Image 1 (cartoon, rainbow, N blue to C red):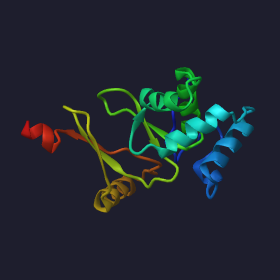
Image 2: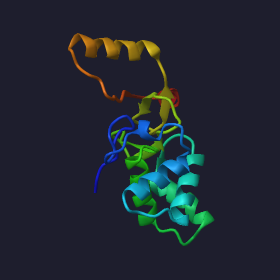
Image 3: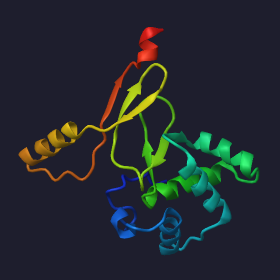
Image 4: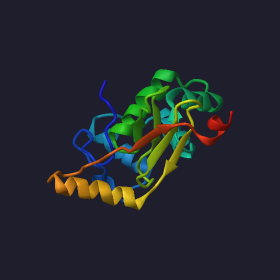
Length: 163
């Protein structure tokens, strides 16, 4: 099974920029059509519930939410649909080293980095322009074309430090 690709790199011949300005359902429809697949009502529902989800969601968490809405949706359908959402640039797979793989909206969200608590698993998103500029400078210094990056810091959140 193919891995999810970052939103700024090619995804099976498509890049996020090819769909710029399109709604999320249209992005998925076009991607599926380009690959000889159909937009099903289950895929539409999975996309809708995924987009309503804030933060980082596991396949199991998304499946649990969907089962309450449509008991006929199977876990395999949810998992495969998440893979399609990644492939077309709507979702991004995140593995934080501890716990299950998580998925987050990659289409309408701005780039951000993560603080990950290794004790409770809490994930805090943050943006810091200084870090972004330093990364760009490091790439320029080494004559390196930066395509994408992931910045994750691991430690203990305040609640875990106090307990």
